[in-house]
Length: 338
Image 1 (cartoon, rainbow, N blue to C red):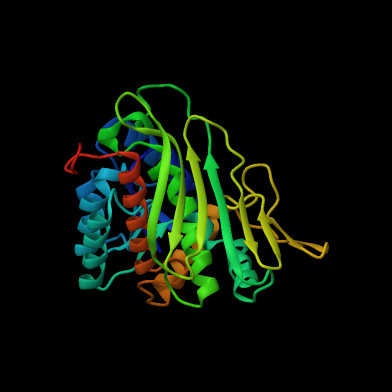
Image 2 (image 1 turned 45 degrees about the vertical axis):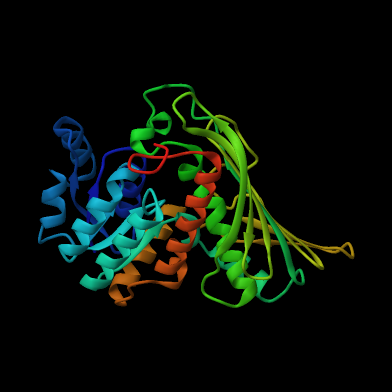
């Protein structure tokens, strides 16, 4: 699989490394609006430097990774799809639901693969979580606690603090917590996708209206299920997932980057009768390389909306994120209140 990357930031570098380590991938070309940065990046990974336009139009590119700032996802994911390229789009797929829906429409019209790049969704650990819930290992699902937070520092030049670049904790890491809640409640209900019907939230904004930290309660249509989610870009949180059922609890120590940040990939299953079982998941391949290998495989199998993160699932998650931001009063350009 011949990859093209849009962007030269931290996450683009991680994906370039994963492509290099993958079973069936090669980085052909890298695009950027900064000639000096793209020359350095491309030389490091043995790729050709180019502009964004040149990447999506390159006949030697099979698949485009959109690793640029959130507000640019809609334009360039659509441009790639319309050029007949398969698309791996960095999370969240877009700033808002309407933009994501436009990307999905473009992928459908042009018969290309489209996936949102939640690396944890591709890891075997997540499938184990889903199987445990689906098989009612802890009985009937009652509630999910999901947190993801870190301290990004006070640098005002960091895109996370820039509203024009789609900054804020909800879109950066809150999207992980909501996507996990959507996946788990769908598994419990035995359906592909579930929707939230209510979102209640509070948090802390900076002077420019960016959410530094927030906590929310999500109410799902399936069984009126509840999820308590929290995120931060100015505080180191525990970053775990706990799933509560009528008969017990599942604890996931490293849900978002299994085995990558100093913890093993393991799941603890506790029954209310006192029994405890620890499920160890072998971590033989780095989580982003697992993601790239999976994407390569989906293209070879001609899948377009793989079960690991279907288009409907991505859209449902964006609708939840829109509700969460609205409750917080976080608005981006072109939205009411911006």
